[in-house]
Amino acid sequence: MTMDLISRRGLLGAFAATSVAAAPVMANAFGFLRGAGDMRRVRMYSGRTGESIDTVYWVDGKYIREALNEINVFMRDWRTGEAIGMDPRMIDVAAASSRLMQTNEPYMMLSGYRSPRTNAMLRRQSSGVARNSLHMTGKAADLRLKSRSVAQMYQAAVACRAGGVGRYSGSNFVHMDCGPVRTWGR
Image 1 (cartoon, rainbow, N blue to C red):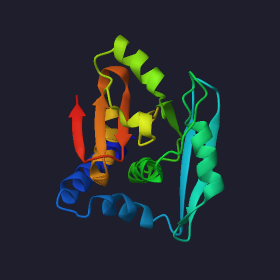
Image 2 (image 1 turned 90 degrees about the vertical axis):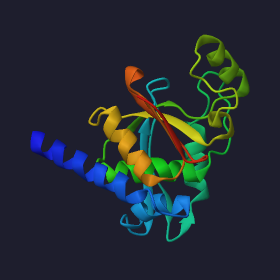
Image 3 (image 1 turned 45 degrees about the vertical axis):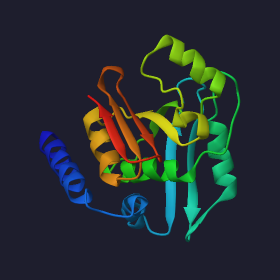
Image 4 (image 1 turned 30 degrees about the vertical axis):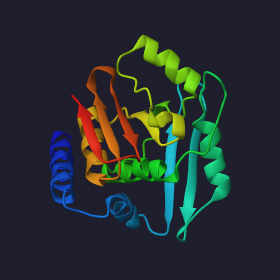
């Protein structure tokens, strides 16, 4: 078991090191998904609502509108019930990261879409919440896995070079988004 973890960490480190020069940006996430065949799948559950989702959202080069609609409802602001269209590229980042980590475990979603009202409330409670958070535009998610460390999740998402990746080790989650490529956190 320990040997498998070391090998995975080494593999993820190698992916991170080799992906730095890749362009265009989203090409890396899509490249990691190409090995999935002609379909892309996402698995998540929400501890807040008790709901889960396991859906194929892309087949034969096209996003499946019905699956994206299910994802939008699942990733809604659980405090207000509001939902918007999540950016499919954000789902691609999560799916590509999961594939890199070689896990079928569903992500625990801590936060997907946030309404402006929810974001403002969270900003009053924490200095770590951005005023113009990409959560408010459906371009970000805060995710956790039981079987992978924050460092492993962070390395996989960074290797995708497809958006922002924040490491929140103290709170045991990783922020993934499809905005500008950048990293932060410990």
